[in-house]
Structures are given as C-alpha cells and as structure tokens.
Length: 232
Image 1 (cartoon, rainbow, N blue to C red):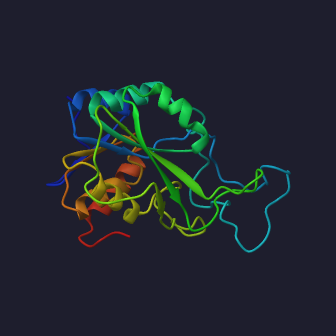
Image 2 (cartoon, one colour):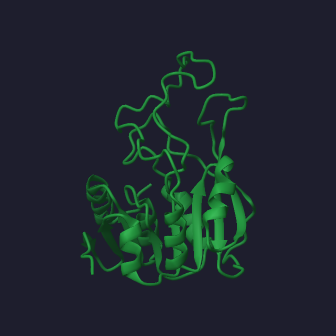
C-alpha cells in the first residue's frame, strides 16, 4: 500500500501517478478534478491566430512564475477509466472542444454539463475569444444536486497576471460551490495540483484525498491545508 505524503483529520495527500494510486485507495464517493485538457496549454506571448505579439494593458498570457505546460499535450483514456473505477460520480473540468474525446473515454455516461462563464476572456480571438470552461458530470446512475443550480455559472477567475500557487489554479469559491451541489461523502482529486479542491473540502468540513505527480505542488498543498482561515 502506498504511503501518504501528508495526512490530517480531514485530508490525505499522495505523491504519485493517479493511475497507480487510485486502485490502491478503493472506492470513494466522488471524484472532482481539473486534469490536463489536452490542448497544449502554455504561456502565450505570441498571438495564436495571426502570429503577432499580444499588446495592450492586459498581459495575462505571459506567465513569469510557472514553466510551460509540457504535460498538457494529450488526454490519456486510462485516466478516465481509473476515475470511474474509483467513484460512482466524476466531475471533470475540460475544454468544450474536447467533450467528445472525454465522453468517449469515460465508463459512466455524461449526466450534465456546466458552463463556467468567467469574468474575462482567457485567450485570443480564434475567431472568438474564449470566456468559458466546461465542467462535465459523469455518473453511474442519475444524480440529483443538493442545491438549486443552473447550467451556467458566473464565477470570476484568479487573474492570470496575479501570482498563483499553480498556473492553472481554480478559485476556491468555485470548488466550494461544486462541492455544495455534488453528493456528500469523501471526495478525491487525482490531479490535485496545489490543493484547491482539498482546501475547499476542508473549509466545508468534508474529507478529501488528493493525488499529485509533482512533489513541489504537494508541498504547496500541505502549506495551504495548514491555514486555519478560508483560503480565497
């Protein structure tokens, strides 16, 4: 059995590959995760459409704190099989143009799609500037939310020009909103990153498990979980 990298009364962290760790954990109640999107996401300094350098006041695409996302080239179908084997409900962040690929790789059927409408665009016009991400809910059986929600969520992002724990970090409030709506029980994030899902779960009094391949992000998640106040 793999040993935890960190453990407290609410959260457990494993440093390793989720394809190897998940089978060791047994069943959890829910997977909530923000995996690589398979879109070759990386800091942008050259316009993706016309080859011109981005100008103007907003320089959010130039990321000076994190290395390029060399891990975002593809979506591994083994990830999808592993999360469905681990939980009856899987909540999966992704790019809208990758929905078909992800849906085909999942064991459980797609039950719902949430459009996360951000408060600003996050890419150049190609031909339209993207202002959304998708949150897909796959489940073994039909699910019923614990709160009333609609299919479009207006939630602000963490500005790309501000310092973040992780290049692709999600807002804690967004993850809390998801956890408040999703089924109760133990939540697992197999692509934990800097630990936002775990921080949100701990703030809500839920037990959570995180898996992360890079030790430096495990260290950051431990520091975030040590905070006694709400981490925004």
